[in-house]
Image 1 (cartoon, rainbow, N blue to C red):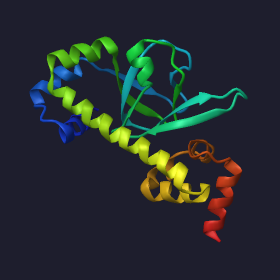
Image 2: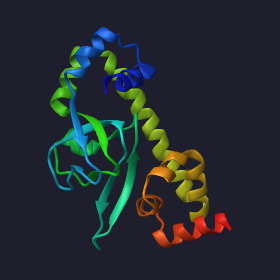
Image 3: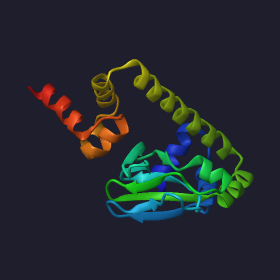
Length: 191
């Protein structure tokens, strides 16, 4: 578990292997079964999670009681409600395992202590947030610039592993489609 995380950190910063052992002390390993809940909507237990293995999705429930997926995270991705994390307020999102998953969780208190002891981790988190923010902007661009069918085709080109690993109803929710329409698009491609 630690090797994957260390390799990810060293893509963005020059953290030494010795310092990494100290960094790991701030994280809590968490195992989840498929469909296991990592965070409940409305909960006040702010943590951020690094996905070591598996796949998770972040969602909210609309006024009609329908879950709307807003984010997926697979290996080497971070997931968490940033406003909940920094404001210690009730979360507007749930986080659930799409498949059996292993994550590393960090609380606000541990994050603050980690950054104080290992300032080099500031660079790591800044770079991770920059990449994540850029990806969120690209998602918005696709939503405004492309038809629903084109959005799926672009997503599949960019993230083929998601299309293979994520159930169709979750993928449809994330892309703003109905499962029936996504099935129709996929069926058209096969014919």
